[in-house]
Length: 613
Image 1 (cartoon, rainbow, N blue to C red):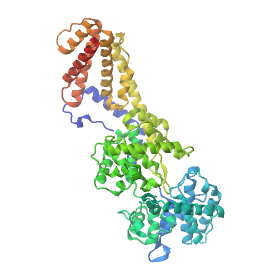
Image 2: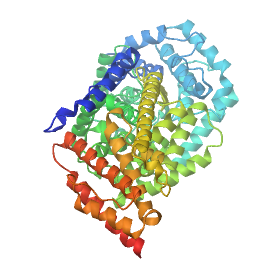
Image 3: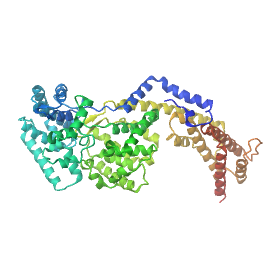
Image 4: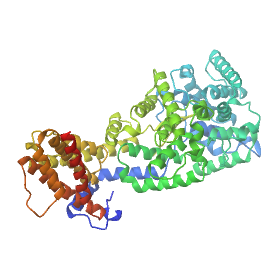
């Protein structure tokens, strides 16, 4: 990162000492090849999002028949991909998917892949191998401790029924299968008696599993401008197979044109992924190295926001995240898109609300803290907080992947944004060890291939240690300043250097803000010293002497001091005010020394009044 203070509008050149210090900071980091390589990797992450392919969604797209012949696939390339991408254990799904929490997801992807191959009469060897995997892992189907993909209780039984239609026996045991189907039917019956917009959206979302929604009018309300349903390839493929809608076909064709043979589980997804990465970089204090890239992304997001783009406004988590980031970066954004969620009832009427999407609630909670003066946001903050607290109490036993979300919720509740110190937040995030949860599960699991948590963590740790080394050097300089100005001789004064320094460094932590930290610390130390002098350290004559010297502010004459204490205090006060004024002029190109003197006069007048009362 190149730091150029001249471009900030200063009319006066920066001091040679400061310029050398900044150049040294930049050069030290530039000389670290690993440092720069890692930053280049992260820039590429910000530039382009690479979402993992989904065997589950690819299978449903592969099952779409050609409009010209119901006996041939419309997208044979998807079928070929399935034949070539079965794992050694017989499953389909993400690479490195052996974590227990993903078992149901892998079973769902494997069954969908088997159905696609069976439908078109190909891949007998792969089908048999996949069935063996299902049989070996059949206990996971009914294990309630394993995380379920969204809609699993409807989609999985629906796929089993579809397998029966294809004369394919799934090795799960008739009792297990019958129980799943009965539970599915009972859930659908109970839900039908409790109509809600959220349920209606959910049934459309899991269309490939319901198989009995015959009314296109119930589905079309969820179709987006790109032709998809919920930006879900699987749902859209099922909709086209059942209804033959041209918009669905347009979306599917555009997917295969972009991804060629295998599709992701959600598309488009760029906005949320890139905004999440910005939040991650900011939460670790390394966003300053990517200011240009971040501004470019936020400018684009703002344009989408202003025109009500569906990728932002119809995706609840993306909308809340965009609102929070744009507001924090000074963009003029309206709360209107989030108004429906001021009350929990508004959230319940959405797909996210029906499936109890905690990620979405967490984003709404964080967004509500961005501008707490809005009455609707206060309501939103209240119900989302209660919701998250209830979720925490319900999470008695979770998998490793759930624990990431649990930690995020705990931190959000314990350390609200308006009551946090940035550097403390950065350190806590680093100590947690995992800075990006790179695998998430909707209908199926997905991963951001090029978002590397280890790269981000490495840069953050290196940067944190680098900043800490600068902070230590500054503390040593301040220690010398105390001694050189004899402040340690003032026995009545509290020694608050560390407190004064770190109260500023907690937010003004980056290397180039050295002058700000030093000025803050010196100002805090002197304020404490003078306050103690007026409270307990000085006589009436000494206090009046100090006030007279400050009011007179004669830099050419020879001051008259009533005591050594007055001389020590005024000398360091005078030198520090002049030094601060010079540095301010360097940055601002204007004189502020007289303002600082005026403030000092006001403080001293107030202190003497208090001491005489």
